[in-house]
Length: 81
Image (tube, rainbow, N blue to C red; front, side, top):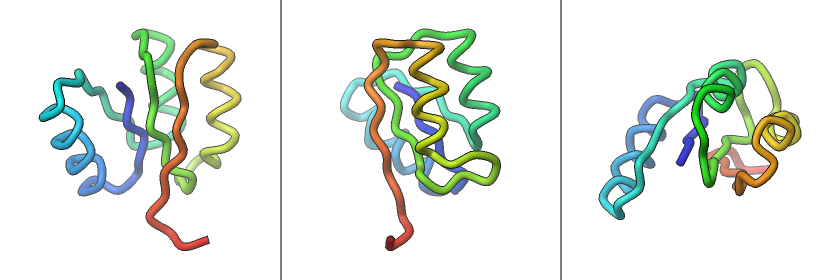
């Protein structure tokens, strides 16, 4: 599982929850790091913050789909829309 969020505390919280449920988790603090990580490792799923500092989460969805077509992508946000 890949967790992409620029908020350090949110990344830590998500990792804690997911690992306690038995998931192996990698994290990325922004879109650039997420792309590099997906080019190196295989993921079944990714939790992606919609508001990242370098790219919109929706744009990152498309990029990750090109790198790993079968990855399940879930958009998350802590910002009211």
